[in-house]
Length: 416
Image (tube, rainbow, N blue to C red; front, side, top):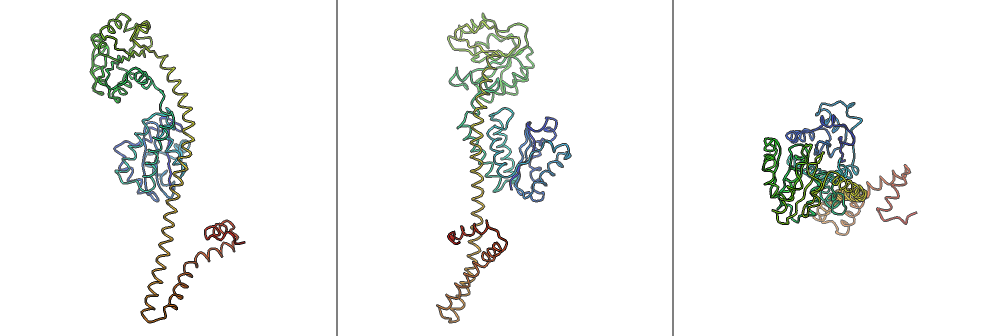
């Protein structure tokens, strides 16, 4: 059977999630060790800041849970209230929800998809995937793409960085050709720098009062670093300006931006003020070609995005139910095919033995008609002996459902 066991941000506090985390360098050894446990045939591990989950194909769930606790040095009493264990179709539905971003802290976020693909790649390289987990993960990836394309679960902004990117895309056709100027060097600007760096903007500039902090942050994202004394020159180049400085007074005044816009010759400039108090004078919004947004504006965009995503998530949940049932049907069909092949193989072995007996009898000069009668009778008896014995026992034990199924399989439903 397929199982998933683990904890996530819904079920466990950060203090426990931290203790269950697997480091990337531990994955190959951990995967190998897990597949050496009794009854465990396949394994994959997904470990992020928000979840640690073990996916296995196994005959029993207990060895997997015991391994997880022992490996991370935890007692059952510590984990039991927070641990979830899913089996078979519930595993399918769960991994589809994870891959689609529906089980994430921020509904619809795309990062988990990449993290799941990485977990798959590591397990594949370690040789711990087989005919159970390999198709499951591949199905989860293709299904997640379908769900995100058929619903709006990932299309609406739910973070400042994403909201700013939405605004930027409304203004600029090719965001990769634009220059971004970030004012500050704190956590907010770090997140912005990472986001714009991942979007491959043409140029990224970080400005800060303490230029050393700007330099340290810029190195991480391939950006240029400047002090605030060089700000006016860089403003002329910047298409997008995001400010998150701690300042009692606005850093960018109307006069400065007005001069900048004249030199830019009608090229629009997006300005986003994340400072509290404000870093950019509100009067700038009245300038032609200047598009100013503050925290409240972004909060409204994020609120609308969350509402849209929650509505889309309901639609996505219905799709996941359908996709999970479809994968279950595929797996059952595959198992049935294996059974059919085994039945045919058994029949072919019996046939070959009887054919060989017939050949030997004919070589001895036996009558052909008599040999045919003997061989076909023997083959028929051997083919129906076991089913006949089972049917007799089912009748004796009054197993009505089994008897009805036998009528269906042997096409004898008219028998009363």
